[in-house]
Length: 184
Image (cartoon, helix red, strand yellow):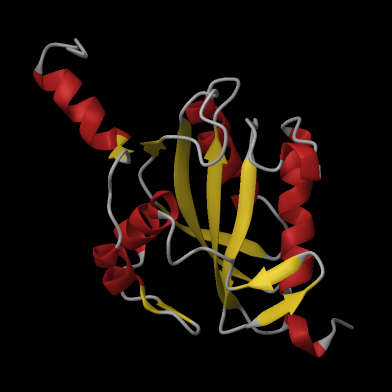
């Protein structure tokens, strides 16, 4: 018999990021892996975005995106499953490498209306309201999502600067228009 807490499907939003080992492929592959998790259904994928690193500047730019899910997993269970995907991509979490380069970073942003602050899990994810590399992809797929305690995503995204963040879909379209040349 399944625990009663698993019977309800709840929405969840996950930030994806990578700046090592073909970052766009890491992120695209992670979308598929998230969709294959038990008790999880991938229901939305944002476009990929490129952004400068947060933290030490002497590392490659990041590719970022957001996944929308429905899940029967609780927040801690989902986070552990996401960490498993990170490990499969070679990610090793450590405090010393917190702001450094990584093959894959999966952050649980929002899980239903859950608000918590416990060791290893804070929801909504800290800093979500100030991080353009999270809010812009999130706004592209869930502009009307209300983040508990912060407000509507579209409103939050309008308040932050998009400086340095570029939608790769738009970049790919411009390159096609120019005949495949980047021009810069």
